[in-house]
Amino acid sequence: MSVLKLEEGNFEEVVLKSEGKVLVDFYADWCGPCKMMSPIIDDIANVLEGTVKVGKVNVDNNQELAIKYDVMSIPTIMVFENGKPIKTFIGVTDKNEILDVLK
Amino acid sequence: MLGPAGVTAGLYTKRANLNVLIIYKELSGLEKADVIENYYGFKNGISGEELYKTGIEQAKNLDIDIKKEEVTNIQIGENKNYKVITENGIYHTKTLIFATGNKRNTPKIKGIKEFEGKGISYCAVCDGFFYKNKDIAVLGNGNYAISETNELINIAKHITILTDGKEAPEIRADNVDIDTRKIREVRGNKKIEEIEFEDNSKMKTDGIFVALGVAGSSEFAKKLGIITNKDKIIVNENMETNVPGVYACGDCTGGLLQISKSVYEGTKAGLQAIKYLKKQNEKV
Image (cartoon, rainbow over all chains, first blue to last red; front, side, top):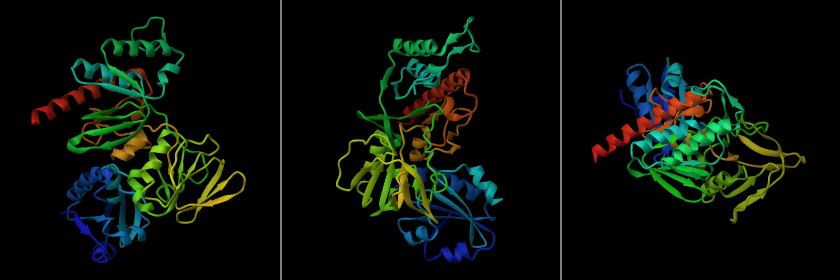
């Protein structure tokens, strides 16, 4: 499963109405650390293919979403379960630390 | 930092005919060590100061360039190059080896820890965007605080540099003020909202950027996207971080705070950097 492009238009459908866990990476193109986080997110999407949805939100294009979830630092990685945020990681985070929450 | 990890990495890379620059600002923990009796080869022990000085002399004898300058920022440039910005200038490099020791500038102000990621930030370039046209503060008074303030000047509406009782730095900009009062605590509900000073007065704020003292590995790790755990840089067995061409060795990677460990890691980091550059050159 590839990494989903999440936007204000599809966030509710893909993340909030999903059963089970969804991983969301808030990022921006100009953000250096986000570029280091990106391959880790891609890797997680591969590892959990078919079990957990993984998506990315570009905060430049989706400021409302960033405000709604109090994203004040990027990368911010949030894990949703049944539509509710259950865990937030701020800054580039180790793959295994995120996988522990998704299992 | 100019300690056994960094100097050893320098020795190996220099002996491989690479251009090496060691930049340091603060003294190594080694220099302060009284007598070292558990390091190989010294039958009567050796003072930290002596071992430290001998190491530097060894580096100088190899013509390794050593500069005492404060690094205030590191940026990822194009073509996998890095830009190291110091108080005196800019250095371009293909690889970086962090040997920055285990010191960390954690503010002891009540509320700072609690609001991390909720208005307390440690990286202007990462988080400045979220404070567009807002009233913010920078906590610190040195070159690093000035550097972080400069990153934010064109984004924020107004910046107050909070020195927390320390001397005011020199900076002139229309939207920057300096407040030298001692801080008692920072407060808020969901996000940071106000700063309370020791004199009972309060100041509203939308965010505080922490930039105390001299920036070290944890600050630069945040800017470059290096994975850390409790402010220690995470490396693999080759001293590689998750960022290509960036290595870490010595106390900044955690574990035993021992010279032998620093020397080993400095060796490994140096050798790995040599390998990396060789590969890069082959690709061209």
